[in-house]
Image (cartoon, rainbow, N blue to C red):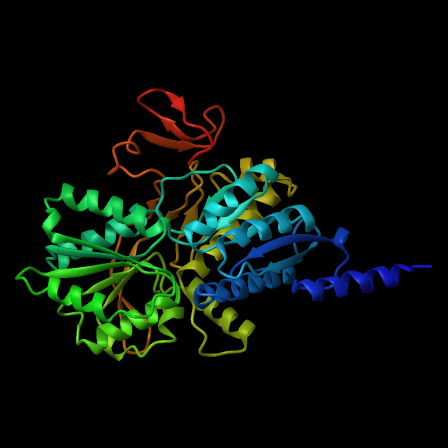
Length: 431
């Protein structure tokens, strides 16, 4: 005869066999499950493993406060291993097998695109914490990372206004985020009078390691009498050899500054930062931000990891914001029911780590400050520029003709992610 204890033991063994991690061994009926969908292996593990740890910390801290709706939260962690189709399989597992109330995860846009049909089909909730290319607003997704108008466009404006840049290298990893972002940036630069001859675009595969020829080409491009900069949408561990090769070829920030959209404190922790001092990154948060909220977050993070040197970064703050928005929306709705939470989360405001508040907008994007940081020799960033107040994320770029006519508003009666104001019609699912 199988006893209740035997059943509990079987559940625990099954969890170990599948690599699932939980914050505590509670029975399913007594917990609210939260999915964590980040690569713990493969080319994106350099960036995503920290986000998994951040989510475990946030869940642990919420449980210390009494949990949610009188229940403890239970983290269900899966590893999609930087394999984009596997992201969809793991998302389905989280929603269909583990019945999680919400999922926090993904980094690359190609992985996000892979899971969108799953969240639509199974009516799940995804909180996406990384800067992306825009051109999307899905009912089941909340975008807590930066849209192009909260990162890419302000970064270019900074280089135009403060560095006098006239020639532009748009260097990215070969997938949807860099290609679409660079399409927007190319249109934006041309609207500022930049010619085709002064724009160089280059794409490399994930994990690209041999940068000698490309960096040499960049160096040559920058020696024609016009101030040149690199706008980098290079993702993952390819950043390590890229920056190393910049140093090898003696490209200093004073010669050709690089502004990166996917390099933060975590990525710099694995680099010799001496040759990189002065290069830039555009984010909505840096560890060096001075605020009481940030000081407390860093202290909690280092206590959780047991590492007094462990750094924080922008996507971690995005998870901090998104998780607290979800908690507030669940409490407001009095339930984890997906439809109720989707309705209740619009307008929710929670503290960010810069000392202000971020708000979930009707287009499922949030308000954020925009910061430009300069790399220091200790791997931190000195903030050299900051937006006046918060910037609301724009799902559809004003610089692409087809997108300029679109707005997103998931409130009733519009309830549309891509409403065409010229034709007064909804285009469908929002992408």
